[in-house]
Amino acid sequence: MASLIRKLEHFVRLSPAEHAILNRAATERVRKLGPRVDLVREGEKPRDVHLILSGWACRYKQLEDGRRQVVSFLLPGDICDVNGFILREMDHSIGSITQVTIADLSREFFDEVGARHPRIATAFWWETLVNAAIQREWTMNLGQRTALERTAHLLCEIWLRLSMAELTRGDNCDFPLTQADLADATGLSKVHVNRILQELRAAGLIVLKSKTLAVPDLARLMRAGLFNPNYLHMDREGRQLDAGSADIAAG
Image (cartoon, rainbow, N blue to C red; front, side):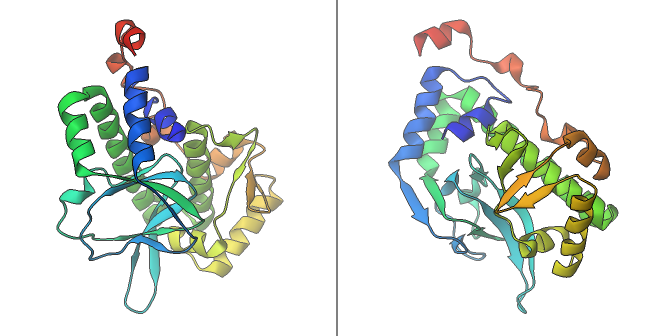
């Protein structure tokens, strides 16, 4: 839950009382799932919204012949489709990449947040808008950037999203994605992804080893990927909605 709160507070600073509401929701209905299993499948009726407490997952679409397109990666602190339970059926699947721990958030929780806790609701809306911005950037990635640019861009995005949740360590972060995962996300073949990673390594832009990614010079990697971080809205544009000092004292 700490990762969610740290991320949401890039948009709206929450009071201790609001922290407690989120922490309670994240501890009531918790499940652990193994790697490479589906949390929910396309066509199923969604009943809860899943919060990723630990581990990595992804949203994906799959064709009948098995070809798969990863449409987003889900990191600790991410909520899978806020208000997704209003859909008649899922139009995509959500699968774990690593072992994951998730909290199932009910419709009643979101109804309560909407009615009684406007700053939390606003933070959730900010996250929804940022997720939509990420999807637009992924469309640009697939349609216009070269193979090297789209791979470097994706690595920059993952790095910054982990940084927002305070999940980086110096210039290192966990990186459990396989070359097949990267291929499914970038629309490239595994052979092509392997070649691009070798180019990025040779240029000193990344170090990939033992499921760890090191970025020695983020600015250089950003230039290689034509990366503009504005779509992640990391500069707390919702700061005018921060909890006031009276609210914080009350919490």
